[in-house]
Image 1: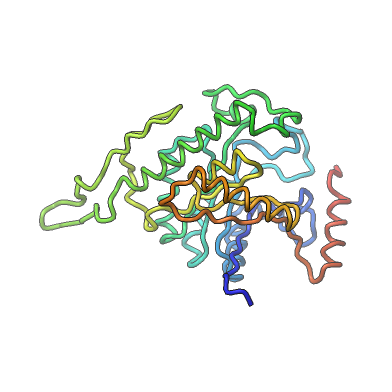
Image 2: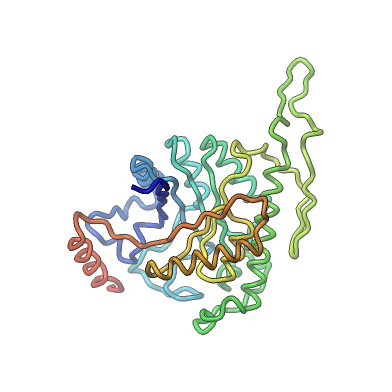
Amino acid sequence: MSAVPLHLAVALDGAGWHPAAWRDPAASPKALFTAAYWAQLVAEAEHGLLDFVTIEDSLALQTTLLDGHDGRVDQVRGRLDAVLVASRIAPLTSRIGLVPTATTTHTEPFHVASSIATLDYASTGRAGWRAQISGRRTEAAHFGRREVPELRPEDLGDLDKAGVVRELFADAADAVEAVRRLWDSWEDDAVIRDVATGRFVDRDRLHHVAFEGTSFTVKGPSIVPRPPQGQPLVTALAHSRLPYEFAARGADVVYVTPHDSEQARAIVREVREISGQVRDPAAAELRIFADLVVLLDDDARGARERKARLDEIDGAT
C-alpha cells in the first residue's frame, strides 16, 4: 500500500457530464433547479469521504458550439448560480470542501473576494474558488462592457498564441492576486468586539489593497473580515501551457485532462517545470488533479452498456 494519500474530488454539473445523462432512468431532471438536488449530491460525496466538490458555472447557456447558442432543446439548458448553491449547501455539510466556479472575466474581483469569503464563513472554513476565464462573444454581450471576437473552431489549436485569450488569462492572474490581497486586507485579530471601550474593530488592522492591474484597480479593504481559512483554496482547470502558467502563478490546485497514464506523466512534468519558472518559491507546491470522466455502474460491462445507451439517445429530439 502506498503511504501517499489518495485525494478525490467530483465536478458537479447538471444531471452529469454526458449530454444525455438527464434522460437516464436514474436521473432526476425535475429536481435539477432545486436546492435539495444539490444538497443530496454533496451529501453523498461527503459520505464517500471525497475531499471536495466543484460546481460548474458559466455566463451563458450551455451549448454544443464553441461560441453562440445552438438552439437545441434535447440537452440540459440553464443552471443555478454556483456560489449561491454552495452557500445554500454549506450549513448542511460539515467536512467536504465546496469549490464553486466564478469567472474572472466580466466579474469584479471585489465581488468574488466577498462572495468566497462569505462562503468560507458559511462553511466554517471549507470554501474554495474555481477561477475561470470567459472568452466567448455571447457571454460578453450580456454585459456590454467589453468587445470579444468570436471564438472559431480553427482557433482551438492555437489558443496559447491567441492575443485575446492571453489577455483574458493576464486579467485572470490579476484578478486572483487582487482577490488574495482582499482576503488578507483584514488581519486575523482585526475584529476585537470590545464592548467596554465601544470598539468593534481595530482600524489599524485593516489595510488598503491598492492593487493596479492591466484593466482594473482595487483599493480595498474588503467588506468581509478575513476568511476562517485566511486564504480559501484557489483552483483552475487547464488544458495547455497558457492555463498551466496561470495556475502555476496563482492557484493551489490545477485540474489537468490527460487521455492516458503516459500523457498524465508528461503533463505533470510540464506543469512542474512551469511552476519552477513562474511560481513564487515561498508558495506551497501546486497540487495536480487528473480530470477524468467516470461512468459508475455495478461492473465494467454495465458501465459500457450504460454509456452505449446514452450515446444512442444523445442528440435525439
